[in-house]
Length: 199
Ligand code: SF4
Image (cartoon, rainbow, N blue to C red; front, side, top):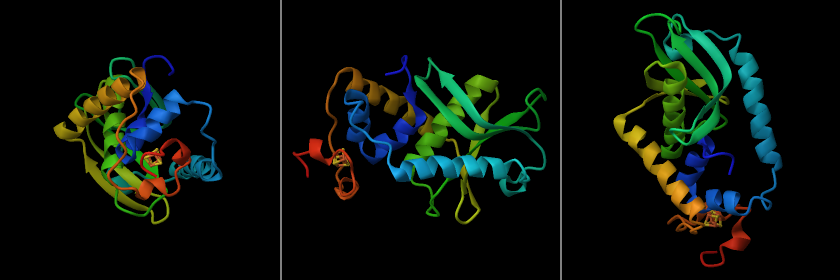
């Protein structure tokens, strides 16, 4: 585990199946980077380049100071990650300014709880890094170019802290978490061979 921090994407994965995150940290040599993962990373990069030419109008903003592919890290929150796009509205040094987070996703489906948790984690990181309040974020669906707003609620903020705490307890204590109730994620999981108790 790098330093004392987890990747923001770990939170999303934890909601999907906590064991995947556990295996990733406790068996770090067994996970291959799949072709799909590489394609996803490349897709995000391309979208970042396109976004630089796009206006802020899809997010309901008329002006803002943008930062793309922003590296964020907080020992206090126990998190690190790269945010696709941060916007200070109207600018980082303007009195009364706020910031918003934007995440690209390759799916056209509405963002589930795991995506919203990830967005809230980026919001907390950005608040600390820029010293501005982050009350909202947006998902930008690459296939449909649709924008989905998300409110960064107090409940989401608490859930980020709780998930980091649960994650740390599992990884540091090397305690295999419970499998998710649904076995659907198991069908194409690269860790199937380690989950003989459920698949
Ligand atoms: S096989 Fe199923 S329970 Fe095991 S890590 Fe994969 S998704 Fe999780």
